[in-house]
Image 1 (tube, rainbow, N blue to C red):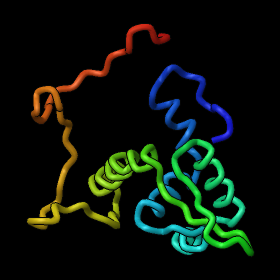
Image 2 (cartoon, one colour; image 1 turned 60 degrees about the horizontal axis):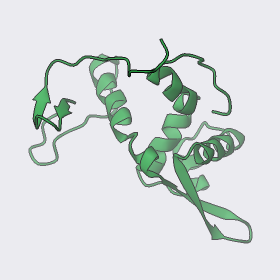
Image 3 (cartoon, one colour; image 1 turned 90 degrees about the horizontal axis):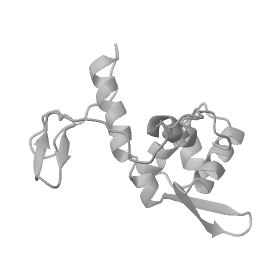
Image 4 (tube, helix red, strand yellow; image 1 turned 180 degrees about the vertical axis):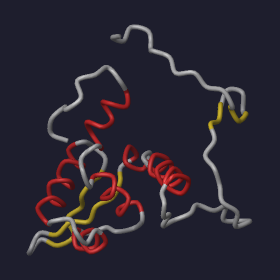
Length: 146
């Protein structure tokens, strides 16, 4: 997003300043699932206008979530790929999918374990203890604002 809507000392608010625009996460999702060109993304997101898609792609590149590569000079055409920062949103998108599966009246997708075919759930993991975590705490980082 070109402007900071949320002026809060909060990870969620500051993340929403980057990925909270309408269509942004859906554009990222399409790139994540293999759509690389403007036309492929536009075709997958049928109701997004070309202007809005163009704006989102430019902003995502400015924010460092995607990179563009020129593949045709005349006319100029680009392929898009996620950066490491963009790829790190996969768990966020998966969390939306799991929440929707649980809470929407009609669910459109399900996440399954590829080996056994059963539905999966998201869990927290502590790399220090090398174990799954049942109880978490969220704490303010020392030196940050209130």
